[in-house]
Length: 341
Image (cartoon, rainbow, N blue to C red; front, side, top):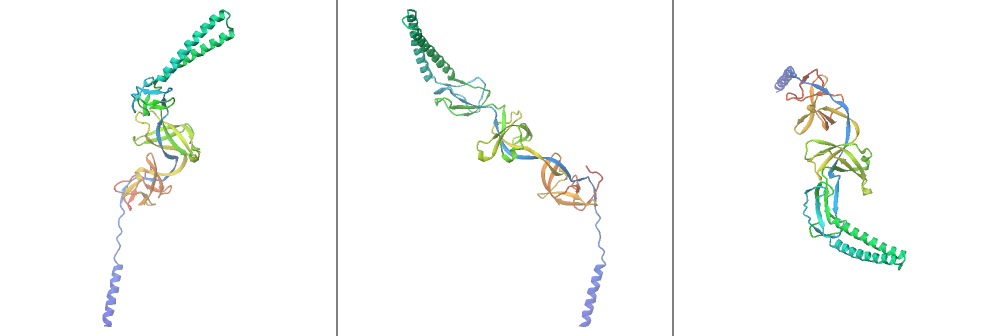
């Protein structure tokens, strides 16, 4: 039994010694051509992003100066109107009654003035009495003229070229002086209105350039701050910023706009967009060590700036990486390059 145990022990030790003698084969490192670059630090603008709505800088509320029933109102919402075109009429029944009464009063006053003129020649009345009667006639004539002027307001015409955006009354409705009937906008004079908090508005000034983007377009536009107005509700601590728009027939009132206000500058880490690796929903880059061996690292991206993209996390300034990702790239290969863009 003892001899059997000794033999087994000897065989085990002999096997262990045999394993130690097996050589470990080293894999050859694959080398590929490529371009290297460094993570660079550049100064980039700081933007404050918010939303805005397109409005018009020229909006007119059309109302009547007279009391009366609305007539000949055939305008519809969305219809274009020309300056001077007839929008509607106001039935001038009340004004005609006022004019008729004024004419009657003026006729009586004229007859009285003529009678007193004859009496004055006959020295039957004093000059002062005549002047009082003559003044009454002058006032009566003024009331006639005023009533006739009111008749000019029965035809309500457009004061601008524009589009009817709201129709508030219809034929047969009773209009009062100052009561809105139509709202007309000039689509050629558009603005974007955005609200900005008081902590941000201190860095904004009239005339500043503003970046604008619309969901309906792939391109961005540049506007300029037109006015900065304090909100009517002081407790909101917000300001209404009006931004002038470039002329574009496709931009219409009511559209939503993405607004970016310039708020200064900051330092940012940048790499070429071509150096970014997208894999399984993750974002990374291929870094290079001192032997130009490629290593994959996860990164987080920030804003894009032309052909470069900002790095929010994962890289440090000056680190070396592959400038352009190719299908042959993977961790462990060696990059052969002398170019750094």
